[in-house]
Length: 335
Ligand SMILES: Cc1cc2nc3c(=O)[nH]c(=O)nc-3n(C[C@H](O)[C@H](O)[C@H](O)COP(=O)(O)O)c2cc1C
Image 1 (cartoon, helix red, strand yellow):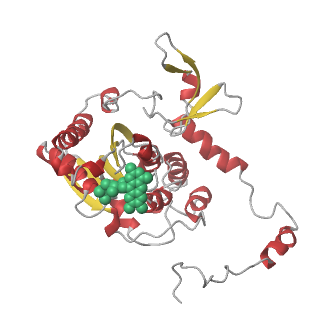
Image 2 (cartoon, protein in one colour; image 1 turned 60 degrees about the horizontal axis):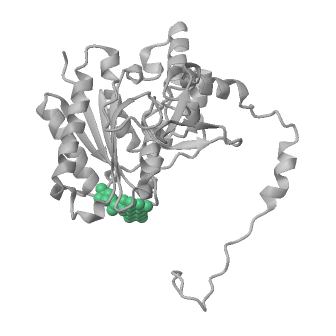
Image 3 (cartoon, rainbow, N blue to C red; image 1 turned 90 degrees about the horizontal axis):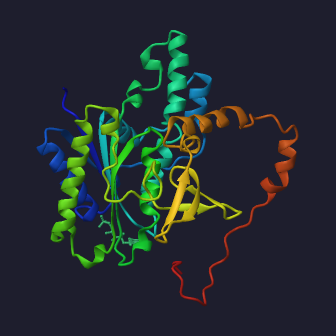
């Protein structure tokens, strides 16, 4: 079997917690025979998605391959992801969620990397006899596994609550199967994670879990959940639920699984999901296809509102400058 490739990406400070945690997991993968690569997000110059949607439109009209019109260091990250059989990501918590750079990279990944879009564009192009070089990258369809690690300084867990859920934004477009997650909060209580042996051991375990998944002989074994807790959602194993407006049901915020809840004999919240609803999860093909189909069929093309320019005119004409600096206060504007 060819050597499996594992890509680690740290979104933290140089040689701080995220860097070290990802490196520890990668070291384990390397020790077990994998080829590994390490990227620091802050070393990459990646600009924000402008929302032009040329990437997706190009795939829908067959003129594009699902790429951004901009070329920057995202291309380096993209090439590494395409080669990887597994990814290990670690992201700090900033303001209770993932960092701005993490979000920037996720916006650049999806929806252009959504495999239902890519697959349809690939098959339609093939049917027309197009060359591979004109089609979405065939490596997009490779099965991949992932592990996600969130880090926060605060001593209270809910201060990092949104980070891990947000990290699935990196993995779901390409359907990377997350098989392990770790939430490390209270990081401020250790000068560096290297002085916290239990967490360093857990990182070796992350590496081992990735290796076990890569060496699995069956698909069931490859995607087997290896995290410490089952969580509330049977698909993504997170614990972040959105209560419906009538307060009778819940949606998994991360993957969209819909269920009803009850309190069991031991006072625990239990969420019941039907297989039909689970198939609508955005981590499954059915849920992904439902969303790409709604984009293809419901999104209105330009020209449907005949007097659009006229309707927009008052808003285009409405411009107001920022407030003038209040020089009697002590803000940060240079006087
Ligand atoms: C702008 C900013 C906001 C932060 N907000 C939070 C927060 O909401 N919750 C938390 O637990 N830690 C917060 N932290 C602390 C970082 O998560 C913590 O320092 C973490 O270790 C950074 O990862 P690194 O060590 O890999 O760079 C914040 C740090 C910064 C710089």
